[in-house]
Length: 380
Image (cartoon, rainbow, N blue to C red; front, side, top):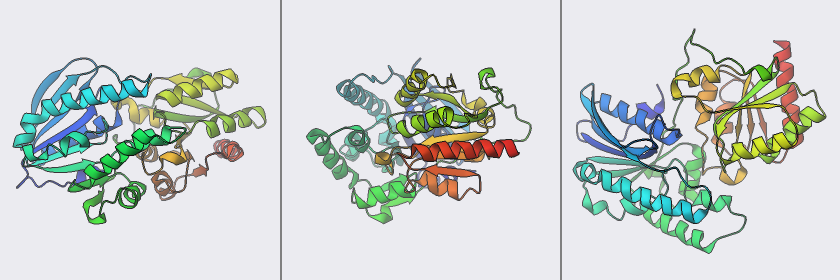
């Protein structure tokens, strides 16, 4: 079982009541909510009474279930999707959503022995830390994505407002008693740049959200991919994920190379839309589909010849692509466009699987990796 479930900052003997605040809960698509639901179930099975507060795109609800010697209460708040059109609209949505989450969780938090919150939705820290005198439970911050650092990394030029917000965020971070990080790269960022003492930071990796078993159904390959060597990108493809190097390398592979590798894009997000638009404009072959439900994820990840992971250099240590764990669990080769400083590279190199890392900007390197991947399939 994943280290996510093996390591817990809470002891059932002294920390009976736990509250977890997250974002989109399954079946809505969101890696953070997915992992926090699994975390909540595991804590309940260990004997905790857990309240999980999150978001739903369809309907609000409150459901309580017994799990072993503990219990799990899920509180879902019906919420509109995140507006992507402007930064101001997104910040307003975040403020309103965070206020609703804290209000819904306020009663359970006042009675809780421990409170676990994440980096998604962003900026919950600006409410939970200043209000910590309202409850006795200790705060644990699972810093999934760094905000406002991700906003800053996405900007073309420095912003005084975001710089001031970062300074305020670090002020509140230094007043949190315990952090969980997803990787060594995040640990370095939190310690070196935010000034958090190392003894308050624990590395707790996500792990794969699905188990791979013999004989499980495998998703059929889309017909238009034919007999090609199939490279799958699955999940979220957002602003943190590299586009330029992949598109140019893929173009070189098809227009100057053998063109044996074809992309299967089972993804959502701004990056996915950009990849689709650019590949379509270049008249390059690919297949686009929606992400599959969690119960079909293992079958999807077993279907291709290899997996694609991408990450912009500016986001190393601020974002940890959690898909890496399930991709490695599928035992398929991996192509990574990103930095050697990312924990994606650390995990992939240690997996023993066929692996190619290409630096951002090295389109010819990606084209060469795609040729090597196709050669490997041809030889098998």
